[in-house]
Length: 212
Image 1 (cartoon, rainbow, N blue to C red):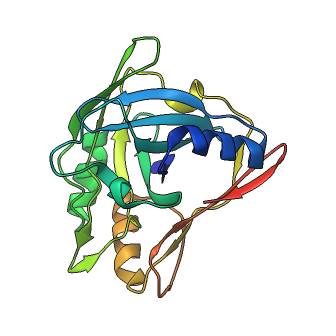
Image 2 (cartoon, helix red, strand yellow):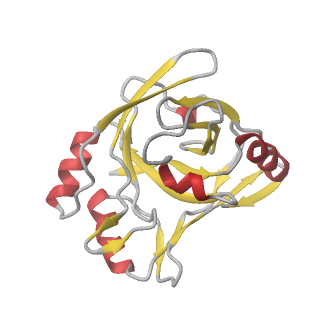
Image 3 (cartoon, rainbow, N blue to C red):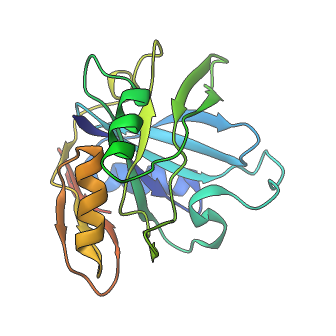
């Protein structure tokens, strides 16, 4: 079994996105840190068992070879580009990947990642890189990647809280193929047919809600 770990919301400018998020929900995301070598930085806010990551180009870093992840370089507005799941308590990312592979979906090999927090602490974790296609179709972020925090405290336990997450909604024209990948990863989200594939969710706070 896996559970939603976080939503990845790509934005053109991090400071503006933090202000807009706070104005809409009443909860202000906290600076997370820089992804060294990827040319991005982020801010985080918790919805209890998971969190939202606002990720944007980091003007203090050089442009990385091959561009920044999640199509961030081409963004004009915020967009929920994908989401991540983590193993249920007692499981590991290797367990999830083996089980998914046996069920017919290859999430990819877990790799080590890190970022440095504003106070200089180095956080480390493992993840599978998001797949852009599978079984001959473009995924458009509708199939999650897998993350495992190991001994690192999960950001959902340290980021500012007070949000509620409405069900994540996934739309794709080839929704049966997407459903097969979701079953292989043992994740439950709302999934249906859509001419324009992608992810959507509603985040509610004390001041109101924000659709992403």
